[in-house]
Length: 177
Image (cartoon, rainbow, N blue to C red; front, side, top):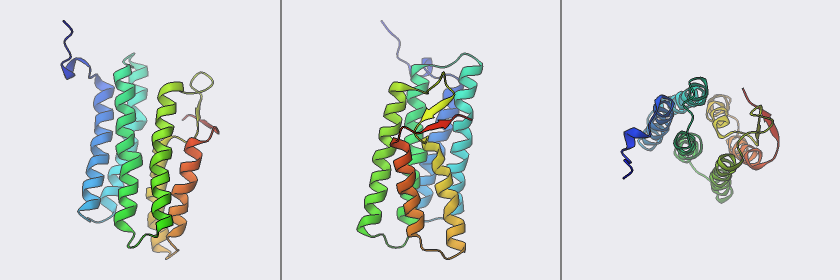
């Protein structure tokens, strides 16, 4: 009989991935509670930092697993797809139908990007990603603040979601850091 106790699956890098997902979840909660935008934005960035390290730790110590790969993608959905969209819905006062459509497209593109990655992995022996990785959404979140401070039209910010969504589902080769 197989023992499917969850703790039999979790390795050190998986705890790091889980931290990423928790940061994303907290970013969503703080956005909904309409806290100062810096807090949820900071949590998304913190999730990105954790995401940067989980795979590196897994590879360095030979702890990579199918469980870890799937957990990482699920956490990325929360932190880099759902949290930025919730952030946009909350911190922009009014959204047009087109802006909502762009954010929904962003969600679909992110989900498709991660599904493709889980099936195909990286290119050229791990040197390149196919399409823009979802953690790049950190740039979306960080760019919100200068646009706000400069009183630029926030449609520019929503257009960044559209561009990132298109790049995620593209076949553009992006060098892995």
